[in-house]
Image 1: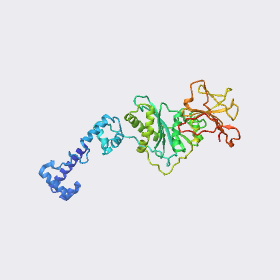
Image 2: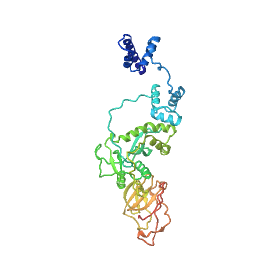
Image 3: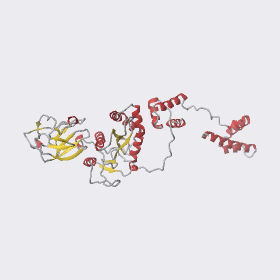
Image 4: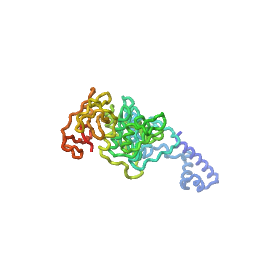
Amino acid sequence: MRRTEQLQGLRMLKLRDVLSHWEAGSLSQLEAAEVLGMSERTFRRYIHRFEMEGEEGLFDRRLGRRSGRAVPGERAAEVERLYRQRYQGFTAKHFHEHLRRDHGFGWGYTWTKTFLQGRGLLPKAERRGAHRRKRPRRPLVGMMLHQDASPHLWIDGLGPLDLVVTMDDATSEIYSAFLVEEEGTMSSFVGLIETIAAKGLFCSLYTDRGSHYFHTPQAGGKVAKDALTQVGRALAQLGIEHIPAYSPQARGRSERMFRTLQDRLPKEFRLAEIGDIAAANRFLKETYIARHNARFAVKPAETGSAFVAVAEAQWRDILCVQDERTVAPDNTVAWNGSRLQIPPHPARAHFVRAKVKVNEYPSGELAIFHGPRCLVRWRPEDQHDTHTIPPLQRPPLAPEPEACGNRGKAQKAFPPFPQEHHHQAVNSCAT
């Protein structure tokens, strides 16, 4: 039985009881009207209707009549058709947003949810558990960022993929989001590069205790703060505090964000007919992230920003995998089953037995450093699956700056760092 029918039944019982007392003379019209919570004039109308029509005259005449503000039948039928044919599986909120934006629907979310549930297209939500007190957000943007990945069937026809997201704690704004086959050190660097390039350096990064973030000597135990991973080393060099989370509840803000993304993003990919990772990442960057932030990001508690703008040269050679090597007698360095050939350099005749540092960048580039000096760089397309990777063609020599201390000798100038991260092999003196 509907609630309105139940209320009508209770109202009828009360009206009959008060009318019987009025007919018996125990209540005046004014007293009966006060008991029923109505005016004396309205009570006299009910007396007239009861005398003319009997108990049927006491029924609320609005029952059974269509409201003037009700959704027209043809629009309701259109909503049902759209949900069944195109938006099957969407939540009521997600579906209602598409109705308003793409189909000119002007009625409210509550009607949409009630309508879908009434037609059996959407189950009613389960009762929520006990309330947990949320950790207060950081007051300024840039004070704390979250980075995490979520494995899920994001794209129809492909297996589980990892969605790597970097998000601000103060606003829940997503700065970087992309799909990879499996998260790791390089995917973490990509998220940091995209964020720092767009916003600047931030204060702290909050992550789980994955092996690419922290070394954990004992499973489930404390992280080893003196044994840094590649990501930990890069954050320490940039002056960014790295905070480990010790439970899923501690990452509740990012967990709730991923729950929203897991519900919405596969459906958005399906609507956009996306079937591969490259197209999905373009859609995320060009379309979805801005739409998601407009819908879910909140205003920070305080105005201002904790981000610090920095030049690309201050982080480009830090956000990468770095490893130390000893130069072999043939002036080469071993790296991932290949030999990296160091070209002749004006600083010294050779680098045999010298300690050098090999940098591998998320873009696939390689570089060799001797102290602060970059000896050579390779673009990804110039690296071949051979025993020895030769250096690139040396660019024309330029007069050396006086600050290098070798006046009169020729030396290469350090080229600018292109946005596409396509480097030429260089011999340079760091300044």
